Amino acid sequence: MFPFIAFFSFVLTWLLSRYALAHGVIDLPNLRSSHTAPTPRGGGVAIVFSFSAASLTLFYFNMLPAAQLAALLGAGVFVAINGFWDDHVHIAVRWRLLGHFLASIWVLYWVDGLAPLSFFNWVIELGAFGYLLSAIFLVYMLNLYNFMDGIDGIAAIEAVSVCASAAFLYWVKGEETQIYGPLLLACSVLGFLYWNYPPARIFMGDAGSGFLGIIFGIFVLQAAWISSDFFFAWLILLGVFIVDATLTLVRRFLRGEKIYEAHRSHAYQSASRYYGRHLPVTLATGILNVCWLLPIAFLVVDEKLEGVIGLLIAYLPLLFLAFRFRAGAMEAS
Image (cartoon, rainbow, N blue to C red; front, side, top):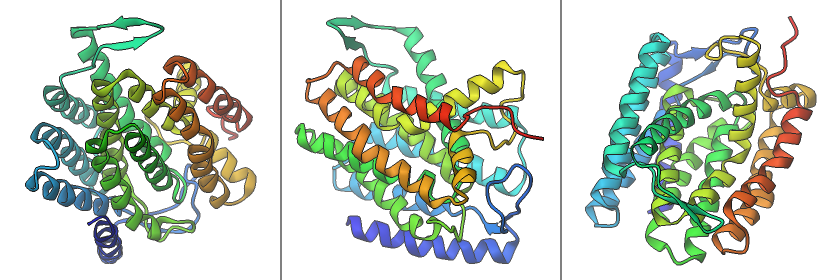
């Protein structure tokens, strides 16, 4: 089944590129872009269709619970439609955010908010406040992934490497029923990645990046109900995107800039200009995920390392890299 999903995504992405070229759905370079050639966008729709079809198939064979399916597809497809429409006709920020919070509320109905978290032998139950934090987290993850989808292949490499790593962790710890979601998403993105690999022949677009962001947010919240160790493991695996996006956002906010406006001040964007190509930065993201973040996440789920400590160890070098490549620094005029 999994190879078929990747192949379906591959073919559908090619068809979408033909559609984008025929209907003028083209991303044109500007001063805030990290690309230099007009490129079709909207290829992320292939990810949405592939993952949705595969999820429905698993549900039919009783391999995916109804609540999980409702959370993933209900919110994910809604966000994707919102993003697809924004790719074609610009939607005001306030209306996009309203849609994002509505999707998050839908998720929380099915996921039941944030599970009690334990670390250092303490258990924290946030109750109603946990629902608020979870909603904010989901909206942030959704937009974070959109922010980080700025150079060829980086968002796709992140999705494939993080999902494969999470599936591996579930497998080694005997949580086989949790493997399917991440593996389905990895295969759905893999077919798209062929066309998005540097130099990209099609971009993901808001439909794809928003979909991936909220799906990852759901995976994190679901993991917390399995154990706090898996919750922290997911946050560790997503560290490259979380650290770069958060540091950039905070520094721009402190300068009084409009954080929702397009810019080129992320560390990964600065690194791509430094190396003169997208490929080294995209590959480095995957290597960091597999060779640095996965081993730390494994130590956490194997109870050799406290989750919070693992998170700090994982993020510190990422913070160094983010500062090294001037994440959120003032852009030259």
